[in-house]
Length: 307
Image (cartoon, rainbow, N blue to C red; front, side, top):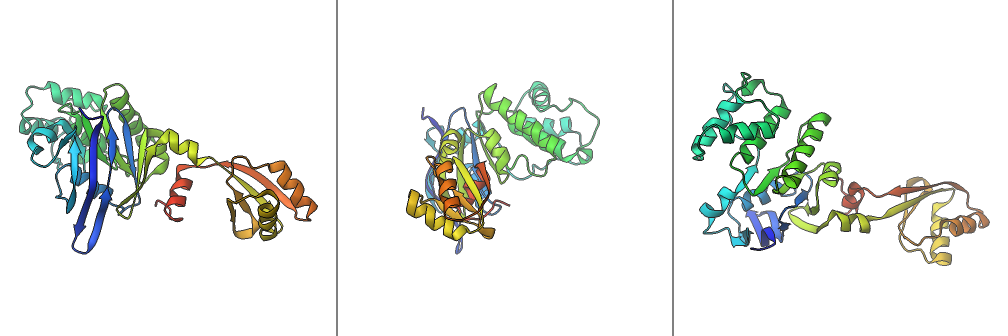
């Protein structure tokens, strides 16, 4: 069996003249959480629909569990649980009643699959509350229960924390980690909330205008992302020229208000301050920042934020 639960090769989807996904080469490893990052409209949902056979690619291929998806849908797709948009739950039925209907449609026998799925997401079995009375967090948990009810090996979750309050987000994060770490599920999830992906994912892919800009482990990203030293100065332009000429500093960014940002691991802060003061440039403040995933996203997408 392949080490990759999901692998795509030059996957592309066009809608007329619009390219939603372009040349996507995705690699999701077994037993890990893969975070697919991107702004709204970046192509995350389209990518997931292509992986699930809900949309047909214009070109390129999808492999699941080491096998081509095309021609093997009936064999491969039952091994996957998914949350793409909102499931069609009946508002006048309880969570248990809704899941029981889906269980029958899937050929699952007895009450055990429904009961265990509800217990797994922290919802009561045979509760009297109708789906229409559920909070958003409860609705999301019921959708996850539906995705895991048949005990799939792979989960594909599109924006599972979207719209949740901070408590709901923390609960969903804990639940997703439990599914991976204790139940051995491989999970591909998309989000535009970078801080949550940073807490959850083992690997990330950054999707921008349908193109996968980068794919790597969170550990490698954190090592590469590094630190940023910010100096607040009386004359940023003169300071930048001085540091380039005297210390050979290359990774300088001149900000509004005269501040300088420096991204060099071996940068000698003490020597730099001494040179600036001797040149008559006032150093008002020196501050060291640890880069966030948001900072990295902005850099590789040309300054665009995630919202």
